[in-house]
Length: 145
Image 1: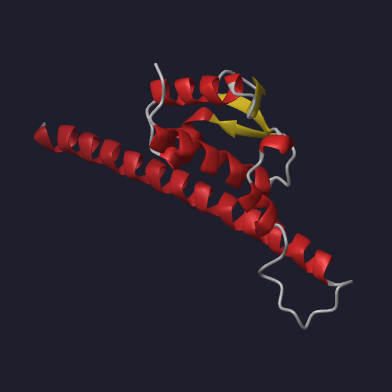
Image 2 (image 1 turned 90 degrees about the vertical axis):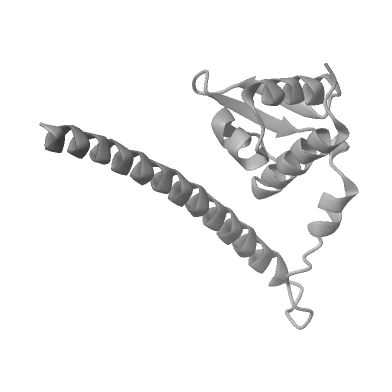
């Protein structure tokens, strides 16, 4: 079953973003994280990964366990948008050229760290909400007696 064009583009944008964060290198992600970021169901995720791999756009290898995958966006298939974004639009013009690459590297590193912290916070918030629900259930049982 073919993916809708909108869904297909959503996965391409997601993997381009992640590839850029990892500087084009292979990276490992939890399938649940991909689902959360793209807002898709597990069957849609599987179909999208199969589709992107069949197109030769994405290389998929097993991760540390069955819940993770190692991904690599094929460099010759990366969109021109990603190449244009890598031309340092965030570095002001008055910075000397020899310092610009180091600032770019620092900016990319900080961007990656911020994104990682956001994911951790989201996970912790979900865990807290789950614990609060369980605590409320226990309190209900305790006070009903």
